[in-house]
Image 1: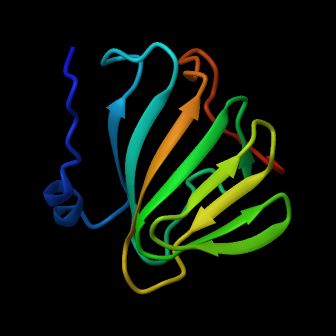
Image 2 (image 1 turned 90 degrees about the vertical axis):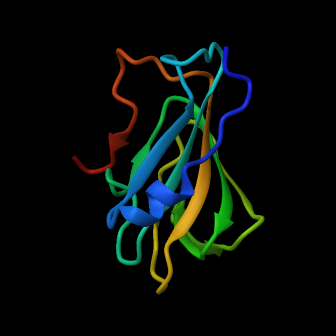
Length: 123
């Protein structure tokens, strides 16, 4: 078991689009949750648009200013903000700023790889 997991910020900077680095998931030792570090460039956002999950999802914003819509309410979250998406609550996030955002995405319980992770609203 690798007890220390470093985010590869150099790889994030080298890639122009949205980047997600799994830090903890079913493929590398997780049994109860998953954690990814995600970079979102300006103008990009949730690949599924407005969507829900069957698990609770929490974002911790590391850098940038994230725009969000949660249960019909729009808001913004800056560095040091914890964003909570309870299971089943429609939400989306995007980067309306000029600098990339970076956040940790934590999913509890561990998502079942046999079930689609996101259900797009209106699809």
